[in-house]
Length: 222
Image 1 (cartoon, rainbow, N blue to C red):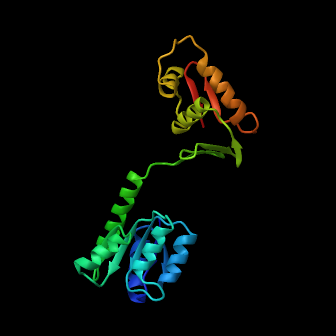
Image 2 (cartoon, rainbow, N blue to C red):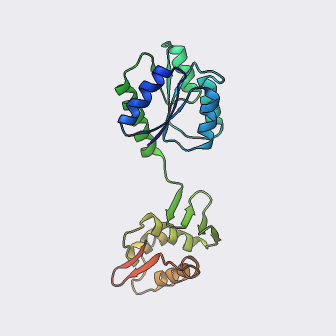
Image 3 (cartoon, helix red, strand yellow):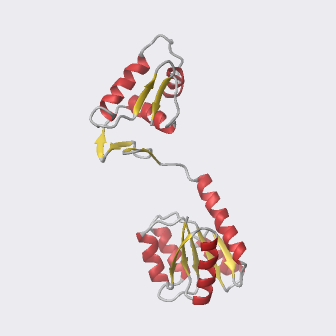
């Protein structure tokens, strides 16, 4: 886990960094708000700990700019101010939690872990990937090795279902029920036909094949 720590007080920063490193985090430390913003915009982090009273750019402004950039980074606010108004301001600017100084390091780490659990539990996947095959669930864009692949609706739904079940063998009947949402005659070859067409686009132009037939059972994408 990568955590960004933006704290200008050297002693406090050393204390926080040491605690998170001992808890198994990779720590990245910034001593002013401008540097913290630059780091947050340029790199990917799992969480951030941000002090409010920072040089160059205060913590409230830093958090606000991170949110304006549409970065959904879990942020815990640190502040020497314990007032209700300050806590409300920190949360309204985009902070996810607020901890007043002085604080317990174990409580800070526990709160960050709680934010991470919440973020992982609530954030739905928007991209499915298997090796160099990529499906963007929001735009329905399919690419392999960076090349765009155009699929009609049923073939797209079939691919999405196989990717959501990557590594698992799915039967013809299961595919019919989930992709077509209908119970077809078990003698129909509609699934085989669609899988064949999908292979022509997903596998045939590439050396490594991803869609495999498991005889007597069904198909697996891996």
